[in-house]
Amino acid sequence: MKRKILVVDDQINTLKVISANLEDEGYNVFTAQSAQEALQLFESHKDIDVVLADLKMPGVDGLELYHKMSAIEVDIPYVIMTAHGTIESAVEAVKEGVTNYLIKPVNYHELSIVLEKAIHEKNISEELAELRREVREKDYFHEIIGVDPKMQEIFEIIRTVAPTDVPILIKGETGTGKELLARAIHSLSRRHDRPMICINSAALTDSLLEAELFGHVKGAFTGAIANKRGRLETANKGTLFLDEIGHMSLNLQTKLLRFLQEGTFEPVGSEDTRKVDVRVITATNRDLEEDISAGRFLGDLLYRIEVISITLPPLRERRDDISLLVNHFITYFGKKYERKIEGVHPEAIEALANYDWPGNVRELENCIARAIILSKGRHIVLKNLPERIINYGDHAQIDRDKKFDLTIPDEGISIREMERELIEKTLQKCNGNKTLTATCLRISRKALYEKMERYKIGM
Image (cartoon, rainbow, N blue to C red; front, top):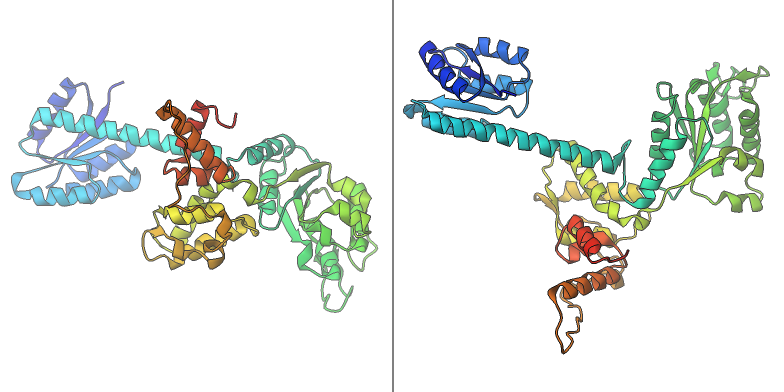
C-alpha cells in the first residue's frame, strides 16, 4: 500500500518538484498551498502517514499548522522545511513536538531518509501503544487490577456467572474491593443498562436501614414528612448491592429473606404489597457460618444469598499485584494532585512489597496518595511512606548488605547453576514474594519469571 504524504508550501514550483520526487519514491502525494487548504485535506484524509510543510508561509505558518493538526491527530509525523536563516526557529519547533526539519533547498536523498524515519517511528509508537493496551486489558478487569492467579480465577468466574441472575455473596476483608467486584458483575450482566444501587448495612441503624431498603410512607415515623421510595424500587430491573450484610439485624434479615423468596415487600408504615425485579448481590467481611452458630444470622438467608460465593484474597496473599496497583495509583493521584511522579525508589517498593497491608488495597491507595503529596522529587522515596510501613517487621526486612552464602564446591560451579541457586535462595528469603525477589536481584519481574521458567524453578 502506498504511503500517503501531505506537502504544504506556498510556492507552486516547490510543490511540483517535491511531489514529483516523492511520487518517484512511491508516495501518494497530496499538495496544499496554504494552511487552510492543508487542514481541509488533513481532515478529509485521516490516513495520511506524514506531513511535510514549509515553516515560513503567509498567514498561518508551518509551526502553527502543526499545532492545529496535532489537535486533530496526536503524534502525526510532521517534518518542516526551512531556509538557512531560520534554523533557530526550526530547532524551537522540534522542541515543541515537530518530528524533524530539513534545510532548503531540500536534499532529496536526505528527505527520503527523514520521511522513512518519521513513518517508522510512528509505526513503532503505534505498536507500543497496542502492546500497552493489550497489557492493560490483561491486567485490568473492569477497573480491578490483578495478575495474581487467584484474581484471574475470580475474573473467569465472574465472566461465567455475571450474565445470569444467580445471587452472589462476595467475601473478603475490609478494603479488598468487594464493591468494585459487584460493579464488575453488574456491568457484565443483562441489567447493565439499568441502575445499580448500593447500601452499606453497617453504616445505618436498623430502622434507617429498613426505611432506606423498603421505603416508607408519610407519617410512618417521626421525620417521615412525605412518601419515599426505597432502594429496592429504585433498583427495579437493575442490581441491589448490600454490603456488610452480616451487620443486618435478625428482624431485617427476615424481611429481606421474604423479599428474596417472593419478590415482594411493604414500605415502612404501609400495608400495600409491592413487587420489583431486582438482582441482589451481597458482601461481608464476617464469618457468616460462625454468626449462624451464634444465632446472629439466619441460615435460610445465607442459603438464598450464597448460591455463588466469591472470596477476594487479601493483598498480602497477592503481592505480585502490589507493583501494578502502585503504578495505577501513581498515575491516578499524579493527575489529581498535578504532580509529575515517574516511579518508586527500589527501597520504597521493597518496603511496600514487604508490608502485610491489613487495610488491603484501600490502605495502599491512601498510602500512595500521601506519598505523592509529600514527595519533593520525581520519585516516591522511603521517607515519603508512613512510619508503620518503613519500620514494619524488622525480621521481614532484607538486609541489603548481607550476602547469600553460596557454597562453591571443589570441582567448581557453572554460572547457570549459581544463578539458579541465587534465585532459589532469594525466593526463599523473600517468602516466595516475586516482586520483592525481583527488586532484590535488581531485575524486572518479567525477567525473573523468564529465569524461573528457564531453570524450572517452582514448577
